[in-house]
Length: 152
Image 1 (cartoon, rainbow, N blue to C red):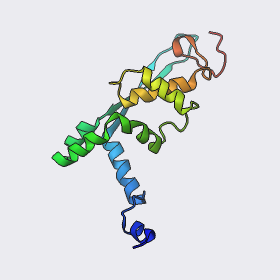
Image 2 (cartoon, rainbow, N blue to C red; image 1 turned 180 degrees about the vertical axis):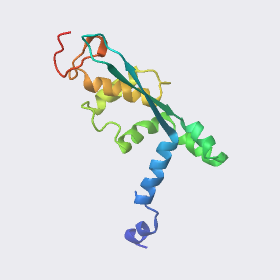
Image 3 (cartoon, helix red, strand yellow; image 1 turned 30 degrees about the vertical axis):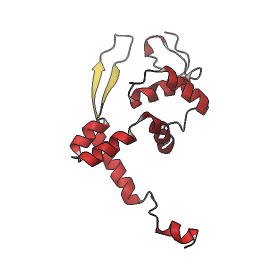
């Protein structure tokens, strides 16, 4: 049996439109987004301020295993996949690092400094913050009404 014949018999994972739809559904099963708008009246010299409050509720892998009614074998496989040595691989596969202007060594150095029990979402916040160092101007109080310099 030649090598090509052996390879053709192996199952190869492909990302089809159907599988993308399944992944989208899983994503939305894991992440609920809600919002509400608050309007704060301004003084005579100031416009009203509209504040958009967004709440994102994220379920972890154990909650999803319960929701999807994983059996014992599926839970064992899931726990194996959630081991730290796979996290870097998953981030690379999902593109979590795609916009970060840091080298893989710098990313690893940052990850090594943050607590090991930090959630994946919070790790992404830290990495994004590092990416933005020196690129985003600070505005005291976070309430600038204009782009660029605000003399207030």
